[in-house]
Length: 586
Image (cartoon, rainbow, N blue to C red; front, side, top):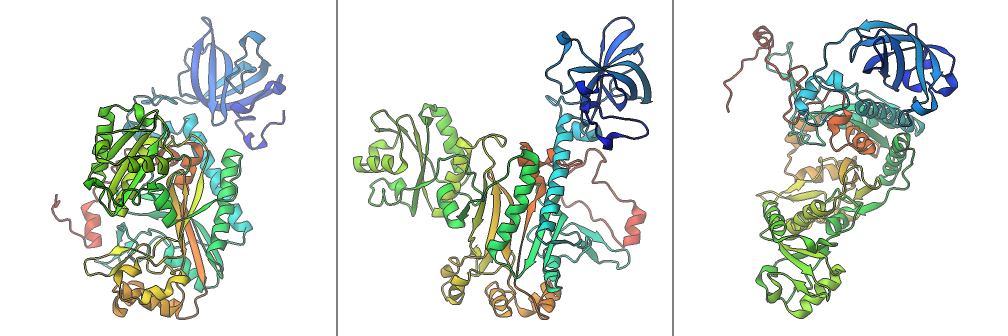
């Protein structure tokens, strides 16, 4: 066997997990941690030595002083195991190390957590000793997969002509949608920097500067509530390109994501399918749909257009069908109804499909036979299925049934295929405020769909909600990986959007002056995208929580059990910054 030359150092000749039967007879030196010790006789013990590649069994004389997690160097001869002692579950299971000389490089106290054993261990306790948790096979695999993804993304972007440009970490606070983390300035008392929520404005300035194609593996920070797929600090692949269309950007990112996926899974994503935002909402009740399973939403409004059942006299009636779901108990159905109400529905109607395709339900007696038959036909329901119906405003019916669909049918994150999806043609505006002014669905520099430009001149506020944007999202198995858009570079369109949003020229200059000034000196048409590397890696390695692919994450409360952050600041430091702490308003 040709051993890894990258393993050779002054202390070791090989990595523990890479030794094989072909190495028989070689004198080697391996370094690592003692993973386990098993007494064989009074003077002989089996010692498993672990490094990041795996473990190897060492036969050691007089091992009484060796303990778990001691750091050791072992010089020994590679020997084939007897056939009856081969361990088929171990990559090094055909060999062991004999004639061992063991040097203890560092002793260890009894570890407060057990390596590779998480059951029953409080996460805060595990993160308090994260440096020990990082020794586990799971964390080693995840972080090394993340490194491979970063390398693949860099190579893919460079291959496509993108230039890596680093943008500043101390910037002016800009309206990005979430709260900024702020940093007081010692040189300008009372003034603050903000930490970047994204490099958005700087990458657009790079386009004005003629960089042409920019990318960065960017660290970003947002002061927002945490959850399984969100941390205060996150890492994203950020990209921007000049003289490109939406299709060009989607092609760039598809290529990079394909490389990243292949380097971890050995399988390459094909062409990523696309859905419009409207189709995603109609079929799945979500703009980040999980397309690994069916149970799509079905519009039933026409079926009940002339119904006598008052609960179905609503602007929108929609339903889903759970295959073989009729086995649910009344208690389970009541729990689903309660969840639907918690999500905003006025109620939830359930119906069980019988062998003759009749319906069993508390409301069945209020429905005409033709309505029942049409409902079963429209949903394609089969005997034993469960039908769930929500009648409400369109947006609420979609939302509630979309959540119910996930509740009932969503596979685990590591089950099934990796189903990437592009969602395109998002609305430019997500609604109207109390004054009737439109609310932007994205930042105010998102280019409208050129076919909808005339709608921007409509005097009817509701018409504005029909304007599509040139914005697009990439999703994977129901997680939003990232988003992007074609940017506005035409002053006339930018003024129109600012006017519609109620942003005066003075306010625009105050918030975006340096960007608008730059656009006055020749801004090329440009578009960009950014997606979360934490989320991508988590899904590629089958983790439900991005904390499992981050070396030193925060807890769900935002705390760092390892360092104790956040902590109080020395009063002298506050004095230097000209700051005074007010009483806790809580």
